[in-house]
Image (cartoon, rainbow, N blue to C red; front, side, top):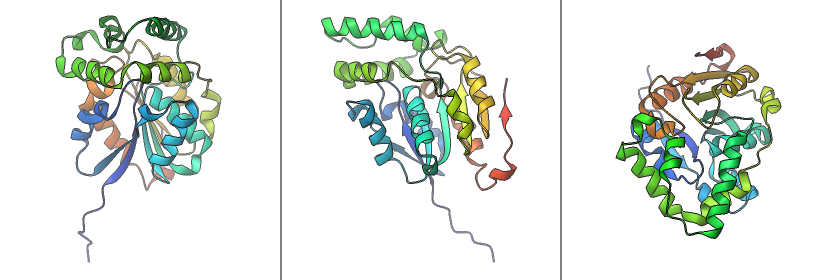
Length: 252
């Protein structure tokens, strides 16, 4: 007799990036479908690096399908290597396990020093050019979300997240110990995360899928390419229950 009862939706625990909240994930969530339910980790509530990790631990499932973007992806790796028993799968979007590039560290230090002396007026046009593919700079449905999150979360959240996470230890050597499936999603035109780092991460992880988005995208993949991201995530998450047969996939 066939059991036709619907399965419960799969819970995904999502960690946003710097100066982002659950609005970052809205285009993705609407495309994932009813088979998934999104739980949003309020990273903006933390005032220290330790509190960020405590929020991830307290707001994620005991065995989590953990999804992180940018800063959130780096923190997800930290959480996963410290608590591998709590991870069913890991999805890392637009992040290098090596930490920030020197140019990005310099940019963040410059922005932080400026903010300490001046009022915060929101995301600048220059910063949008660093975050987005040129084809999206005039797309108000994307730029508007980024700008509104910046204004709503504000100067204190930005300064806190910059100050507590600007120096990120290189976690590449910790990746081989990750025995759970990992999906790495990146964009060739991301100015903040070298594609070579993503390929190096995939080589070090025992069960890795690397997906480089084919559509135009800069750093803000969940907003710039939510349909392709959702498709890659669904394909990745369908591998569960067959991990021994799971084979690494590399999309060059």
